Amino acid sequence: MPTTTVQLDLHSQYVSAELAVPLNELQLATSWNLVNNPQALTQYGPAVRTYLAGHLALTGTNGAAWAVQIAEPTLSQAQQTATGPYQEFVVSARLTPPAGASVRDFTLKYDAIVREVKTHSVLVSIRRDWERGLNNESGTEGVEVGVIRADPRTGLVPLLPVNVEQGSAWQGFVGIFMLGMHHIAEGTDHLLFLLTLLLPAPLLIRTGRWGSFGGTRRSLLNIVKITTAFTIGHSLTLLLGTLKIVKVPDAPIEALIAVSILVSAVHALRPLFPGRELIIAGGFGLIHGLAFSYTLAALNLSAWQTLLSLLGFNLGIEAMQLIVIAVTMPWLILLAQTRWYSAVRTVGASLAVLASLGWLGDRLGWSNPLGKLADGLGAVGPWALPALAILALMGFGLGRRRRVHTKM
Image 1 (tube, helix red, strand yellow):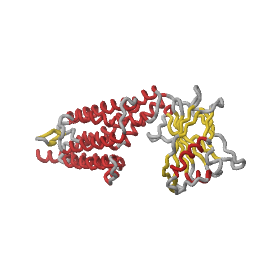
Image 2 (image 1 turned 180 degrees about the horizontal axis):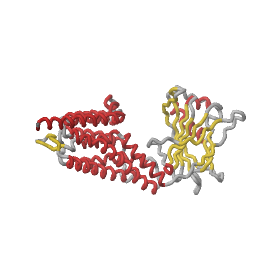
Image 3 (image 1 turned 90 degrees about the vertical axis):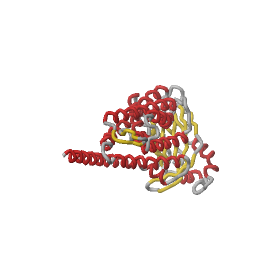
Image 4 (image 1 turned 45 degrees about the vertical axis):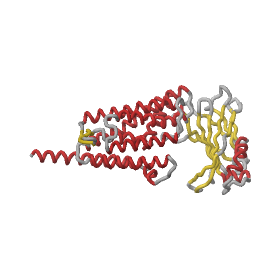
């Protein structure tokens, strides 16, 4: 049967929890009409809060009780391999220890459902813990704390001791650094903007159009300038957004990111702002930085953790950007010296136009097939890179052979 999950996030002064409670099991425990009831949340939301408040308690090592605040539940769809789809209430809670008590050592009492339904079980895990580098977004999985089940002989529900090992500032820094790398690796839209803006970087402009290859040194210099401008832009708003000095809703920011890709893609097809790529990269970098800041702001870190995280997250972003540029741009520079580059640039920029339009539609509330295709671009990247390398080597080789033949 579906299980309850309790995911804990450890902060410096409190612990937050997210409880996922399956409706069918909760109905067995309470006799409430929950399953297949469209009004379940409206009718039973307040009762769910009261019920959970009576079944969730924490005590410190000295036996002192923690303060427990239960938020309003939301209704969500879930699925387990063995049971198939089902509905669950998702409820957040804030758990605050007495002054001076550790958030890493406590005893958890949780007997909702499991006290009445003896076959039920509760999976408890640590989802986020900055000091140990756990953030639930950088590819790291939560750490299981234990499973709460009723004793089959006595029917009693045991308490669960939670004693989390101490972490360190270094582990926290490394975890956030990996989060920054993961954020870019998974952030197809951020990478697509930068790569599309760099697509015409190796070229000169002739009569209002992109012309021939401008030389390796010039190309590398353009790449460094554009990447640096983008870095300065997003670093500034990452700082302002994380410190909550600037607060902008995420919906318009996500839409503007799609617009930034569209503008850079059209520029890659035909020069819109020749010689002003730095301004565009830096300006749109401000928009992308605000999107980055939502990740750190959501972690609710202490002041010193925030400062370390800003450094680590930004370095992680830059490291992944540099890796992507390092494995991509040499092939583009090589291709730019061939006749094939015009076609490659046109196809790449056109795909970016379609992806940006799809994302823009999605982010403005219009679900469309282009948006779904754009979401899948990240999976294509690892395959596109070797294809680009092969194409560059073939094109450069054929061009060199043609030049040798002409001289003869």
